[in-house]
Image (cartoon, rainbow, N blue to C red):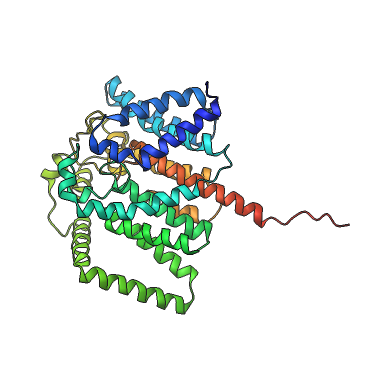
Length: 399
């Protein structure tokens, strides 16, 4: 049986959904095959064949991004291989956009319930991963520290992707769907607990900000008091288990580094390890970089090894593509969200969430992260369109 284009698009979408959100972590955990590069390459090649490429704002942005990479490469004398490798960033983003929107835009089937199920199963799995870290780390084909084991069903060490998915689910249910029935409340509570158990501090701070804003604008005085009492009870529980003290110490360390009140390890940064405060000091002491030092200058795209600790979208963009690269990478987030979600203040909450994620993650370099972003943006934009249809005044047939 020969599949038509619609069936192939459906197959590719669900393959991407399963690998990025459900079974990809297990495949990487057991080390069956190093499938991620092969799978992403397959999607890129097939996308050129089966999807209609239209000239829209996203394509224009990706072309601009690619042109900047090429320009920076030639200005800095980067190798052709480094330039071609760096072009994977706009290509991955465009591909994930096509995989998600190319199928769902022409599909009436609502996948909301599937995403809710994926959100609900994260909490028990994260708890299991934490409780059985020692045997799991011994069995894992990839060396995983305790703070990296809490990735749920997503890729190994991808707790930030899991947290982003869950935060966007919460935004969708609170600000777009706005139907707080028992199931949706269960999803929200489960998602929040999963984020707070994961080790992504920026995600936890972002989620607290979102919940605080929602509480501020959507509750009466009595409800605010009730929420404060509920949050206080949760804090007491966290404090009794010793988790609150651990979180406070970690947040204090982060704040101390950001404000340079604690020691900054330049050695760690220069060895390619996580040291964001040192990175800021390093680049402040350097001359302003307009086009950076060239793509692939500090990070090996094949091995992931870093010459400098650039675990951030903004730091990496600035180091390799300069001020121009950092501006374009931030501009891209606004273009992606505002082009696909036409109206509604909640889209700025989505932008805020993604911008916060860029502090600790290399957004455009992660196919799983880009897939999750486009998936949740499509869910929000499709629900927004349905709400607009419902709110339209019906045409009167009366005389």
